[in-house]
Every structure is written in structure tokens, then in C-alpha cells.
Length: 334
Image (cartoon, rainbow, N blue to C red; front, side):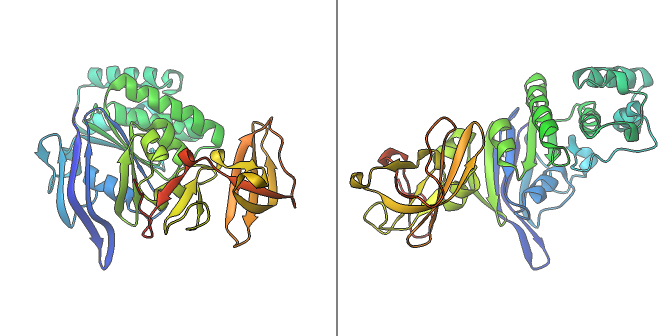
């Protein structure tokens, strides 16, 4: 196996800068998640690692080897696409063994590799079916098995769960984490889904407009966001951002996670808000209010706690230790 390193990589499509001066070290055997909104450049980064796109400038390394100019087939990288990309006329067995067949691998070795991959991913009873006879989750596992038989240095995965329903996404997410632990391989995983990023990644690289914003463990990125974009992109509901002078003196804005917003007595200090919406989700309640200046604030409480009603006027506050401070440019203050 091998790590991946991108050094000052830029990718232009005509006048559009898709990836801008991007540097990232992905350790051997790491599960790195590239996270960001649609169109932020994360898939372009993945495609440059796999060799499907050539960087306009900068260098891409896999292990100690410079990959610039190396064809995708010679990079020892397996790609798993969002669309599964299975051959509809071939059986599951034939789809899985196809990469080995094109390499001229012996028939017996191919059969053994297919059997091993099918056993790992629970496909042993489906090998003689065709993709049209499979569910979405089964098709996704076939695509994973096809990548697995190659025994690559790096697995590149481009939003592989986005076509699955919510229940199946959760199940397949767990399967992928278990697969990574079993194989001890390097995974580079692209998603716009923060839940996938938080639950799957060893580390998360947050990207917006082709620029790397922050790299860290899921806990680090959630607890200490580098800027307002990262703060509001991770978390459901997103972090509340209060304008300067509202909670604290100074020109900095203050961020508070919904789970840390508290309703307090008006004599205890805080800011008045009018409740606009109360959403009961069973295990928790989301309470949305509006401040006098129009700022929207969302509080998240346990389902067993008493909640205000729509139209009530309340005082909201947050303990100092739960406040995140950002300067006028949006960057985190120490």
C-alpha cells in the first residue's frame, strides 16, 4: 500500500480554476474524506490522483513515485464511481473479474480472487446474476468487489453511496468502514455528505471553490473549525453565527452550535428571540427563533426537555466555553 501526496496542484478548465494551489498529504492506510459542496473541486482532485485528469501545475505522488504523466492503468489505483459503471450484459462474476481478465491473469487465480472478494462483500450467492437483477446496494457492492480484486495501492471513491436510499446508505457506510479496517488500504473518498465524512473518515479535508480550507480528524474539524465556512458546513443544523457586539464586545462574530444554545432567564443576560418554528423529531427538538436584527438562531435540545412554543419570546445564550470566535474575514480566532 502507499500514501498519496499532492503538492501545489492547480487544475484549470479554460478560464475556470477548479482546483487552486492544493497541497495535501494522505498517509498510508488512511481513510481520507474530501468534503465540500457540489462544484467545489473535490472530484477533480480525486480524478487527478487516479490519472483521469492531468494537473495544470503541481505534482501528484503515490508512494515515492511521481505520477505526473503516468497513465491511469499504470498507477495501481482502483476507482469506484457514483454510477456503479457495471456491464449490464455480464454476470456479477464477469464484472468482478473483468480488471483481472484485461491484465491476462490466469483463470484459476481470477476465480480465487473473485471468490475472496465476493465473500468479503456478501456476494457469494449472487455471482451468476446480472446487474439488472440486483438492488442498488448489491450493485454498489459489486462495484466495490471489482475494485477490491485488483488489490490496488489506493482506492478512489467518488460519492459511491449517493444513489442509495437513506437506510441502505447507513448500512453500506458501515460495510465500507469495516472493509477499510480489514484491508488496511489507503482510501480517498469524495462526498458532499457531512454524515459520511464524520462517521467514516480518519481525517477530513474540507474544500470550497477549489481551495483547501481545513484538514483534521472529524472531531477536530467539528470542534475547532478553521473559518465560518467550515463551521456552518459541518453540523446539522449548522452552527449559528451571531454578529459582532451581540454576545461579546469586539469586532468579531460568535459561533454557537445548536446543541449549545440555551434558553435562560431574561435577568441572566443573553439576547431576545421570537420563536418561529418548533420541530419535534422524537429523540430531539429543533427550535428556530429570530432576533430583533433578523438573525436566525436554531437550538437543538433533547426530546425529553420542555420546549417553547411558536410565537413565544425567549432569551437565548451560550456558555463562554461553547463560543467560537471569528474575525472580520471569517477566520477562527485563538
